[in-house]
Amino acid sequence: MEHTKPHVRNPKLWVPSLYLAQGLPFFAVAIVANQMFKSMGVPNDELNHWTALIGFAWVFKPLWSPFLELASSKKLVVVGFQLVGGLCLGAVALALHAPFWFAACLAMLALVAIASATHDIACDGLYITSLSEKGQAAYAGWTGTFFNAGKFFTTGALLLLAGHFEKTLGVVPAWTISFAILAAIMVALALYNSWALPQAKNVVDADTNAAAIARTLWQVIVEYFRKPGIWVSILFIILFRAGEAQVQSIGPLFLREARNLGGLGLSTAEVGAVYGTVGTVAFIVGSIAGGYFTSWLSLKRAILWLILALNLPNVAFYCLATWLPTDLTVIGAALSLEMFGYGFGFVGLILYMMQVVAPGKYQTAHYAFSTGIMQLGFVLFKLVSGDIQIALGYQHFFVWVMLSAIPVAVLSQLIPMSARPQPEAQAAPHAATAG
Image (tube, rainbow, N blue to C red; front, side):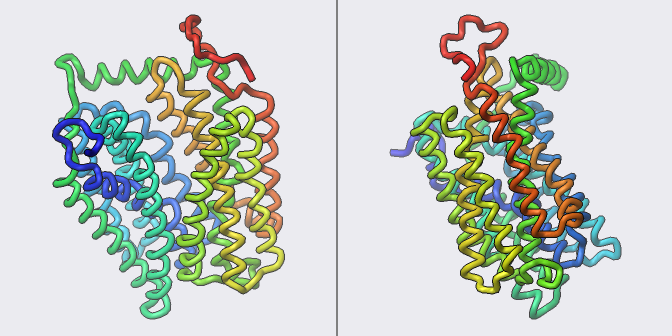
């Protein structure tokens, strides 16, 4: 017996396809686009500037998320934006052949990002609405697994395929085929989900309209910034990603860079082999281990260890940049260490936003705002990562990355790691004292 609400199709038929469709376009924009532009000869600073700006779609998505409630159902929004995302991924493949290919690709990727960010909102809402609390818990592991399956496919199988076609057909045909495949998968998922997904109809009151939603949104925003200590929390959230954002932006490019320029000189296919396979597995194992570790120790006692876990393994990149090994097994082992630490430590930021920042009257909305600020931290540090790397060189850049973790490590020992009492809610019995 599945843990569902009445008249909902077996979740095994739609949870995997729903979250695979969430992961594919996200990783296509966040990782695959950088690899494509690297193959096309775009400098590190320029490609990171533009792909970082595209990432603002995920920063600002909480601002338009309430208006999606005006749609007749969450299923309509989900399927619609899966189709839009698929068509825009196909447009990237076509844009590669335009005389102004770089600008055209960026424009299409920006549309993919907006469609994906909007899809994320309705996707999570459909999951929550369609399953009971017991069902949500039962399939929570599935959501993460199939979201990361999108990463496994895009940064593993797709890069391997692109690398093969780069050698046999050339760079432009290789990436045309790769993005055409992505587009076809997204359209196929949309068509399948149009059958498999539950309706998740939105209940809209007669007096609910765009103006009323805008007023509520304004109230949610005001209450968020009235939370005690919110500016320190925002600083903590942004600084948490300082090192990780830079290494996730430059690390894959360092693997591709020519050896005479300080890189490892790997092919597109070799990057896919190490990042999309063992790297993805290490990240998933690290995420699970980090969750259990924090549950055992508590966020307050675990937070410094989580920050260290997130950042210390970046020494692996410094070692790679210093020794420049050629053995793919050695490189894969170093990257697995870094990705394990990334997964293990990132849990700390998620729990901080969930347990310290979000609690209160608008808990769900305020968690969404916090994730937007989290993405802002990633975008800001990605934006400057290319410039810093070019100024310092790869070896010194990875030293800088590790030093970037010091401010958040210090801050973690000075600020509370439990929810503070809300101004209006003196009677909140669960509000813990500053710790």
